[in-house]
Image (cartoon, rainbow over all chains, first blue to last red; front, side):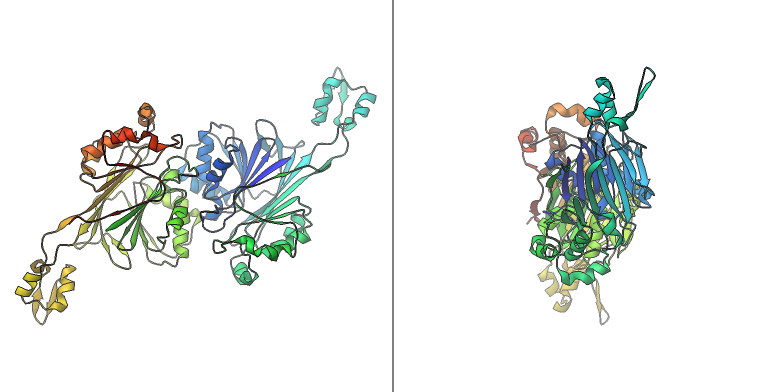
Length: 314
Length: 314
């Protein structure tokens, strides 16, 4: 199970009912923050999911409406008593941006591990105490990135939460594997005991379908997005403009209309589309819902502090 | 008349009912922003006083809760169509801080004129189109600063809005000054016409009492504040802790309790004290009002978007 919360669905400038771009993922009690626009902390405070357990922060790009809440939240996480490092992933140049902003937060009681435009997917292993980015063989989460088409370096993100294979009790019994090793084998560990080697492959079935979440803002609807978001359970996409008449603005400012986002959702064969990053000039995004829904039925118009739970299938 | 609005009364981290340190002054339709913590834009949007007419931004210090809204508001001002320069006043080091933060707002359609820790009071002349900082002889506003005692370079501000002298009609008539020059003389201009010189001093009386506003956050209650705020019409002061039992925290973190702020107000012989910058750990600041009021009667406990009008006397 993965819990998600849209913390801020606004683009450009914050308005009373829409804080700026921010999205929170809660997995096994650990958290990933995606973007950190102004208002992120307020939404998090209202939600009450806690600050200390944020292990990874993914930044799409260095525009103010996606990152200005970062120094404040890093300080708040520091005040929560955290001392474990935090991983920040972002586009090319993210280290300079974070260092520039952190002029107002020069002393943090933990390290920042900054990964700029990762060449390969980042593998993450989640435990009760942390999410450990960049680990090797065993991992329960894969974070992939895609370079988007915006007016500055911008990354899309996809998160694949792997599902544990079923434990095959019959095979374990047949192979006379002592019960005391079952839980370690289930965690994919190889156990060596009194000269005997017990391989997890003996008792673990095939990998089952995990949960895929993808997130693209800000960008034009480039074709690469279609395969990147392929079969996502939830596709969170920018819909800066609801009205199709704003297509020229969308092209000029490197954003999307609702219908462009819906076409991506359709081609990407995703389960559900969640629209976000609304222009402050669009007063009631819900009024334009039909522009997306007529193309892709399972469309949700985002709002601040929308919360959802994504469950593993079967 | 001077209109003021407390945009954010929170300290440390923003919470739903308290955005971070920010205060707005509206004088003759032009605006001065004091501090720009997270949430400033949202409060301004609710107030509806407009962004384009912000001419001067005074920053007390470079802690995140006082400045993280700055790049966002500079961008919004840019989007409002402004091209005239904006003056930013701040403590020593302010230029590095502003430049660091502006990594996310590299292109602004106007210049920033940054004044770090001004040695002398900044004189300002207000017209319908702008507030012109650092002008010479004629000015209608004087901005003074005081170095406070906080954990980083921090400035207190006082604003003295000068009141025009009365125009002496009798003297103008007696001296046969043509009526067509009266308004220019009233604006303190010297008029030369057909070899004759008309001096404003002939028709203008003594300067009348203006409006004084002073603002000190974050700081310990150093004695220098008493003369700095002397006889202010409104003294806006930090009251991070309402409960007197938090005095040790106040000393350690270089802040004040309500009663310490009230003692300053009393010694400074101000008209009114407005408390702000409340710790997020203090749920209902109003509960501690008596701790200030028992020392200084005219105490107001601040809240977001509190609005007041200060009028010239007589």
